[in-house]
Image 1 (tube, rainbow, N blue to C red):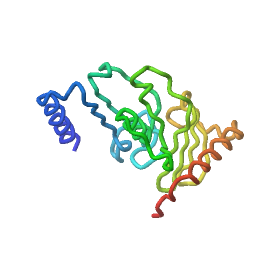
Image 2 (cartoon, rainbow, N blue to C red):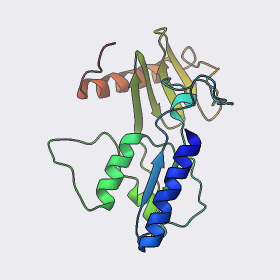
Image 3 (tube, rainbow, N blue to C red):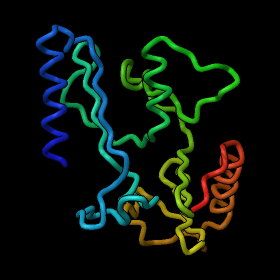
Length: 189
């Protein structure tokens, strides 16, 4: 599967080059989730379909020769809905005012080098929930226990700080619940 994906991306890039559109075309690739059960995600915990870092910290590649210098690497945390907002802004489109986007455009960061605004990143999937604010991450796994991690100090999510930081845990949990109420219900099952 990975070989076929690599080969297919090569076909797209070659076609862009041969058509003269390579320089002015933004090519975006992002994995949808972490590795499956036999993958090696060290040092991260979790994997595909998990909201631990091994399931949500995935590679994204953006290539746009006319606007972006190659070879850059960023460790800024982003999530998939940010790319919807980014691609709309780059394309000159605006979402309908009645339909608020879940993500934040990364265009100022990518194209002008501006700092990303502090914001919360939100996830929910199959009975798990997570919210990240800065280095702090609120997480509730399938076992139903609320946990709190400082990812700058503990990217493996092994040192639950919920007991040490109950107020912060409460704030992040409330922020997750407020965001969840704004979205469509997650399908059961």
